[in-house]
Length: 380
Image (cartoon, rainbow, N blue to C red; front, side, top):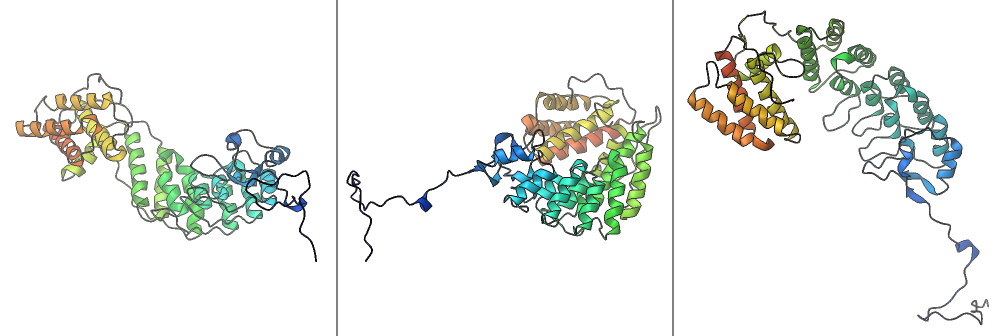
């Protein structure tokens, strides 16, 4: 009958009186590896395989970044194709996702210079149809990475897969993130995706029309690209989106008139007609319209997060302007002053924004002859 191991004579019994047993070689534990990536792992010079070997002697290849995004090692910008292969072959999870549900393939697909990295991920089993807040195909489409887009499609990426809260597709993402100066690459992306059965959906046509309208406004002021506008018309035809009507351009001395009905539509028409692409308007009328829009966008679109003294100065300038020429009526001025008081400091008040906007239209249409704007006391 086998006997229990005996305690050496020199050994002292534990104070607790628990049974003593010797360490066994197979029970010896190795130092645990870290489960968080080094602070500098995300960005910097490309790692060599030798450098990765040194780092991951003490760090798990499944480790995550220290910040809230929880990005995996494979998502690092410091990896080339060799680094990707080494990590995957040493246990990194090729389809691991970050906090937003995006994979390493999504992270790298946006960059033309990372085509070999994308290829290496695909070779090692990366799924091109895993989606989070974005998708590999959407990343390539959004950033105009044509070679990456083609590589992903050839690897089985589905152009009809949607993602995110709005149910976007790769085509939707590319079209809603584009600027007017991205028109050439947007058309190239759209041709590829449409040829694979993709169509625009949801609010995408609205975003596209806003982009065209903005460019048309720039061109009306001598600042936009006619070539890009022609490309946008071609893009709209491809996608089946109705183009926007160019804004009216007032001749020198021509009075302000509108064709739209209802103050909201009239405000939009006045904005396109009188407000420049950046900076203050040339006329007092244009500046009243611009102030209403800037304040409204800051309050309703940004929650007042960037509110500062300049916004307060803009509101006071608005109050002064609408008391000139053919001023607002007394009841209108009382309503305006109450609205300005409620908006002071960036407080959220949608009815007050509506009052500001509607009264801007009222005053401008009562004062159709443009007046040059003195230099403003604000920079916004």
